[in-house]
Every structure is written in structure tokens, then in C-alpha cells.
Amino acid sequence: MLDVDELIDDQETRVVVCCGSGGVGKTTTAAAIALRAAERGRQTVVLTIDPARRLAQALGLRELGNHPRQVQVEGFDPKGELWAMMLDMRRTFDDMVRAHAGPDRAEQLLANPFYQTISTSFSGTQEYMAMEKLGQLAATGDWDLIVVDTPPSRSALDFLDAPTRLSSALDGRMIRLLTAPAKAGGWGLRKVVSAGFTMFAKAVSTIIGGQLLADASAFMQAFDTMFGGFRERARKTSELLRSQGTAFLVVAAPEPDALREASYFVERLSAEHMPLSGLVANRTHPVLADLSATAAISAAERVESSAPLATAVLRLHADRVALAEREERLLARFTRAHPEVPIVRVPALPSDVHDVAGLRDIGDRLAAS
Image (cartoon, rainbow, N blue to C red; front, top):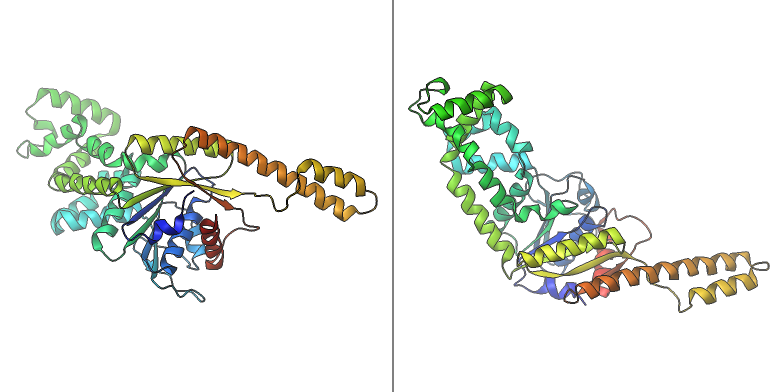
């Protein structure tokens, strides 16, 4: 069984990454773990990559920004500290450019239309910026525990590939050809020495427009000087994710689709040699009384005419038992497929979590299993 308190109390644990499909309570789980860690004495920051604002609402904050903000609300007096932030992909990219390109070069990059496009829509940018922000948080040394809430669905693990994919894309043959005009002694697009590039430029200009091609060329020339640092930081963050100080938690609901996704995450993490700590089976429905579904239905039939309220309660209990047995079969199937993965079951709450008290309740349930 997964011991969440042991995990967050271990001072060697520096990063906890919560991943899973959408709609399984992953953001809430990440926030609850971060809050519990802060109350147990850790200096904790929780980073959400999910653009939904549930985390801010649950922490009693009107909004979260791209820099950590301390959580200070009535009734919350932790032994440690809790900070929270939500990734702003564009601002993170801008900050990275300003920090590593130098003032003049940074302004050229930030004003470049091609940069303005890729900083928000280039494949892998969000995942890379999540890695960049994680690396920044770890480098400050301000927190001894970072809890990361990842995007929903299988894209939650795309950040494992993001540094390689984005670096490869920006270092690829087509993109490198875009730097040729700027490196050709300032001759410009129409005076490039290479006839091959001239044909390439003409073809691409027809498709995307000459101005965009020129913008891309200027961007790559300006970006070229910081490319090495770009890749080096990605490498360091990848090493952090694979280190023994990192713990991955897969969050899933006890439902067929969610557990299939959980199996995918577990297999992918294993293949990537990532330190998987366990599965959080969220929103389970344990049986509340030692009475079988068959016995409950029989009892309901006996008292149906004389005690309608008791009948309703007994039938409700029978439905709950059937649901619990179904969930148990699904979790048992997952365990047979992945016997090495410890599981913690978190019973469902009667209502949605919308405040610190609710998050604390989730934390208690995480630790009580």
C-alpha cells in the first residue's frame, strides 16, 4: 500500500509529479498533497499546468500567476509554507529569453512575429515550458518540495519528450535552413549563394509567405546564440525527473477508461526509468456496512410495504455494494497487471472540494487508507 505521509515526510523527496487522465481529481490530489506537506513542515510549492482555475479556487485565491504566491487564508497555519502558481506558457518563454539572450537580443526575439507564433502554438512548447518552470523552481532552493500537477490525458507525459522534441524541431534541417539567409553575409533572401536554398525558400515562401519566412530566419539567427543553454537546461530538468528525489504518482478513478490510461502511464514511466511511487485510486466507494447486496435486497422486499424509508436505504446500500464490488474487480485487474505498483484508495467526498478544509479532508483520506 502507498504511504503518502511517508513519501512527503521523506526529506529526500524533492519533487512529486501527479499525472493521469482528465476528470479524475488530479489537480485536487496535487493540491491536497502540497497542503498536507506544508502542514507537516515542508516548504512546499504546487505548480499546476492545467489551465482550469480549480486550484486557485480551492486554495482560497482569486487567481494564480506565473510566479509562486504564498497561500495565506483563515484557518490555515502550517508548520511549513505553501506556495502555488499556474504555468503561463508565453510568460515563461519570454522570461527565459530575457534571462539568457541579453537585453538587445531579447528585444529582437520578443518582437519577432515568428517567435510570437511559436511561443504559444509550436508543438511541445507548453510541455517544454513546464519543464523550464520546474527547473527554475528547483534551482532557487526556496522550497524543499515541489508538487507538479500535469495536463490531463496522455499529453501529461509529453513533457518527458518535450526537451528532445522541441530541441530537435528547432535544430532540424528545415529550421536550420531558415538561418541561411541571415548567415549569408547579410545578402538577404534573394542573394543566398546556395541554389538549393533559393529553390527551398521559393517553395516555402509560396506556402507560408515570404515575410513569415524572413521572420523565421531572423528569429533563428537571434535564437542561435542561446540554443546551447536551452538544451542544457532541458537536460538538467530531465535528470531531475529521473532522480531518486522525484516521485511520480498516477491518479485514476476506479473506472475502465481511467485505469486503462493509468496502465499506459505506468508502462511509459517504467520504460523511461522514471521513479514511480504508486497509484492514487481516487473517488472510490467503500461499503459502509457489513451487509451483502443480496441480503439488503431481501430485507428491502420484506419491509417494502411497512417501512418505505428503510426500503429505500436498503436498496441504496445494495447499489453501493454492487458499485464497490465492481470497483474492486477493476482495481484487482490493474494490480494483476502491475503487481509492483502500490495503491492508495481515496473515498469520494459527498461534494466537490472548493476550499482548504476540503483539501485537508482529501489529504486525511490519502493518509488513512
